[in-house]
Amino acid sequence: MVPLSWYLILAAALFAVGIFGVLARRNAIAILMGIELMLNAVNLNLLAFWRYLWSDNLTGVVFVIMVLAVAAAEVAVGLALIISIYRRRSTVVAEEIDLLKW
Amino acid sequence: MTLAQLIFLAAAAVTLVAAIMVVTAPRLIHAGLWLILSLAGIAVLFILLDNGFLAVVQVAIYIDAIAILIIIAVMLTRAVMSDADRQINRMGLAAAFASLILLAGLLAMVLQVPAASPAPLVEAEVNLDALGRALVDVDGFILPFEVASVLLVAALVGAILVAMAPARGD
Image (cartoon, rainbow over all chains, first blue to last red; front, side, top):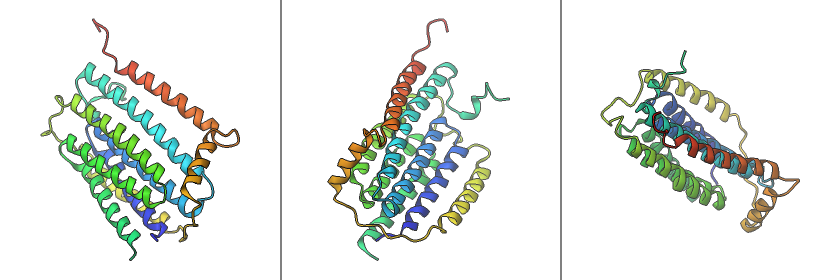
């Protein structure tokens, strides 16, 4: 059987890769992709802990389903915002969208 | 080294390499395709964790809906940011440094988790049945379930409103 720590190490690495994408990418859609990677790392962690430590309890699975629902809502609103900004200002580069930046 | 461990290592390698390609690929459309591969690797890991239901959900929601939505958005906004443009901002090195520090911190914490062996599962069908009941049970998760459905409706209506074509003369 696969040790629990392998899953946790993989999820940590996936989360770090995702946060690099969020911090370093210039394109707003690529930033959303990084967020998706981070959400997936969290899901992997939740499910691994559920399977190894609390498999008699459904809370972990329900948490993963909630994360999936929130991720779907987040990506729909995020992409709508990007499309809207693209229509009005013709850019998808995050650092050019600075109207509210002090 | 058992078969499960070999499958885990293969799926983990595919997931991680694809994830790194997602954040470094110079062409955004390729990043979207790598994202699909990475999400598929996660689905394999879900099967390895004895949860075939969530693996199917992962394929149906993440790969089918979210990844395709992202790729469509990439294609809709393609004209403004050509692939020859710089894709990493000028803080790229600092970002890499920050995420490495985060990784080190996470690993230091994760390696303190005591080893645990998984308890034998009850049959999968019973489990899925219990999940369905728990989601609509008053003593279970009915409140988060209903809140999630309201959130989804609000998000989708809001997304349509936000993305609607601007009125004439705007």
